[in-house]
Length: 188
Image (cartoon, rainbow, N blue to C red):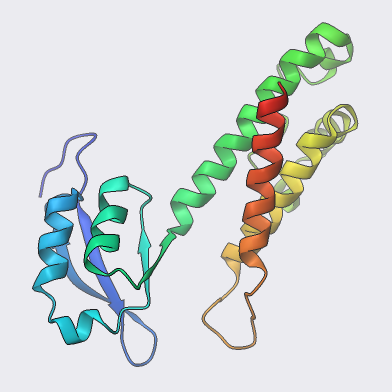
């Protein structure tokens, strides 16, 4: 199937008895009508057993699930959530760098250099670590947002479907990240 940029498909999957993912269908797009039609094709007795749906955060898909599976919890897929967190962190960095330009000359120490915000802490080069620490001294909001992004990455890297990895507080990390980012954006 050839898709152009901006064209999307929807892949519908489930977990088998052993918890392994199994592809059920590949829909031609992720529009609400298409997803609703597929979900209604599922026998009602089986629809009633669906507890959770992982969606790509596209409003059409989410609304389709809410319409046909009203008792299912909708969660954002890991890729989209991570992408949003990284984008929010980068937006925060840009705002802080702009603010620092007006308040101090110190920002020149990190301008034009790779600061390393996009990398996980363990993957930083020494000069990136130094630039990042300097930036964190100038912006406590950025430090906190980076730490929360790191925690979220650790959560994503866990095998959450194993009983030895309780995940009851994971949503709190994302919500705290969103709160810090939103609060800071509202203040600037």
